[in-house]
Image (cartoon, rainbow, N blue to C red; front, side):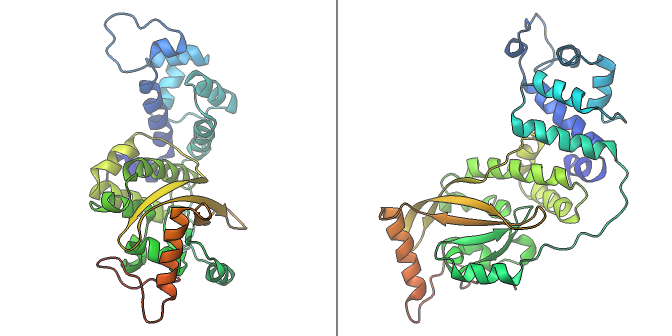
Length: 304
């Protein structure tokens, strides 16, 4: 397990400090109206420069960045966000980290595995587009047959390894997903955001640790502390049976507390991608045939 993973799981104050440090070192002095000056030995802004821009003492900001026991007010956090030119999503992430950092000692609590309600499984059975239920930490919890045929690699994996990000970090994923690298960066930011909301979750700790050990790409991206909140996008898939498909995907939160989302993929009606998707669906419906990606098992409609 990497140091970043330990910080995420054991000390929310360090997570807050690391996030501020990564953002400070990316911001150039000239981007905030400061003269770069000669002989700068640090990347980005100095701590003292950021503290001045935010209107806080340099010592107070240094203690924040070092992960020491400080409890910044919302006003201080907003001032830092403005000084660092944060996006709205980065500002929300900063506040979430600060909430966790204010109460670093947490009593143990139960973390039940995410489950898919029977009603949602019935809904999946009615969907004519590739549709999956994806958990908070990007675990694939359930899927309909067409999603299994489209992205069949995950169907043969144990439940603990059926994770969207983990699949795209596989060495051969570039062949199936031409936009893999950009998608991995985006998903890592989404995972970072979810982990910040529940830093002690055992599944989050296990997943981040495993991915960091297995993939240098993930470890590098995780250390950047980027955050994303993406609810729709496009994906390209090179399918061995029907060729390349470019599909739109949308994420729909399920009713209740924050948790799994329903992700469905669609194509422009009447276009070539729609035709390929219908061809794949036809292969599913053909008597006595089950479309299979090389080396995978037949598609499934829910987790075992």
